[in-house]
Image (cartoon, rainbow, N blue to C red; front, side):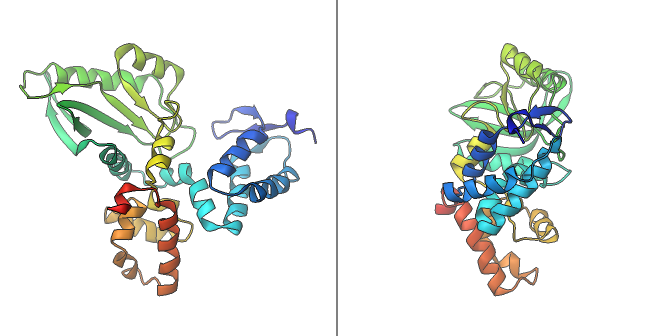
Length: 283
């Protein structure tokens, strides 16, 4: 089959041309070596067909990476792991808060702020160098549900109300932030640039996206694990253990789930490899 003419179906339902370079780059990003990556590509090439879904390609690549080395599969599933943080969105807010802390901000979660007209619940308030920024987190638990222009329109109106309040403070307001685990539409990005909102999505802005920040800081959620069951992950999330490095500091929680010593060792080793770049883990 001529794969240059092969159409694949994205989670949004859109048809796009299959790209070996994108597949190769995503596999290399998992940390797998060139030989392993080429072997996986060779297997997947023989299994492609017209109209195959990106999910099917992902699942096959994930299984092959897991057979090669579990830590490769854990890193490869990062995007899906964030979807698994839960429908409430609060673990995602905690996750973002940890990223911002490690980026040098003082962070407060779930703040109630007085606006000129009404009070507002703000997901995260960050402080740095006498500047305060208000951060809204937009979490989606399903692929294909992106943020359109209504999101920054709504959030900017809230920021204006808070900024225009008569409350006196010893800090100045910086731009409002909106952070999502999915993507922003072109109109959303254009509006945000015009109004001075700072957007962060899975792949935006270039070199400083959510994905880039996670990789740079080594802050991987516990849901990346290929060794923990769904029930065990939920047990940890319920106890506000969102990150792998948090589990490394409170590994006794695994004992509460009746996890054997041998399996516990494997789970912790998996997270040590994932979090080896994390400053929080080094402290």
